[in-house]
Amino acid sequence: MKTSVSEFVRLRERRMHFRIWGGAAAPLLFLLHGWNDVSASFQFVVDALRRDWRVIAPDWRGFGLSQWNDDAYWFPDYLADLEAVLDHFAPAAPVRLVGHSMGGNLATMYAGIRPARVAGIVNLEGFGLRPTDAAEAPARYAKWLDQLRAGAKIRVHADRNAFAARLRHDNPRLTPQRAAFLAEHLAETADGGVRLAADPRHRWVNPVLYRIEEARACWRRVTAPVLWLRGSDSAFLREYIPQEEDYGERLACFADAREVRLDECGHNLHHDRPEEVARLIEEFFPWP
Image (cartoon, rainbow, N blue to C red; front, top):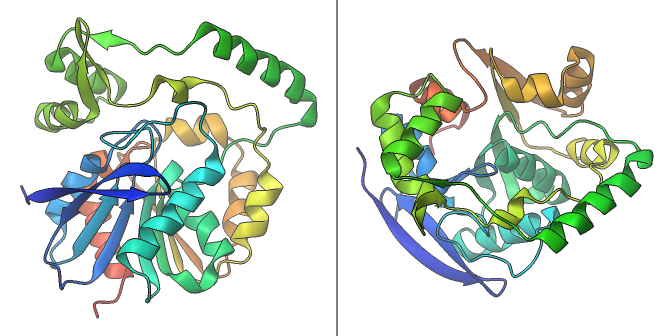
């Protein structure tokens, strides 16, 4: 297993944690995790990389070892955090981004907002969410207000073994060894056991409706090449983008995009097929 170091940087008035692998002089590769995940989750992919990359993976605000908000979370803040990360670690050259789920959404939207800052993107199922209708807004706002009043809670597991067992229940493709590793980093000590290392406020429904038209407008401005990776058995896609026509329209927004489907793989491609993901990343990004 390749060794990483932890680094804490204060960005946008938040203490942000980074997991970093590789030599300081090596080419930079940014790995962006998804919702309810942490930077260490990319360990299996990093282990499979054959070249000496300088891999930088943040814990997004409210996840892992990064500072929590004092209130709700808003997606634009993550875009601003990403820009602050790039300004800190790579202020001059266009960057290589690899993002899973929420991280993939951030990477592709940011690449449309700041086209000159991105050299290429490998997107692991960061395809956006289902389209929403304005008629949903009153109920969503009401639910959000109810959750604010009730407060935020998160499930507590007896210990890390129980947490690892839950991970394998949710994803049977996880080996016991990988589940145990993830449990060490995805869980934190809580009263009576361990819980997910994430602010419980992330579980509040977002009162702002997802607007696919805005995402598509950003995607159409992306000039960098994009490699889309999707799992052949992704519950995420079945739930959020069930129509292949919708999926195809999203993919068509990008001027230069190629899709690869991974067999025997769910939404967490970096856990199910890390060797294949690493191979595709290194084939996609030219070695300097």
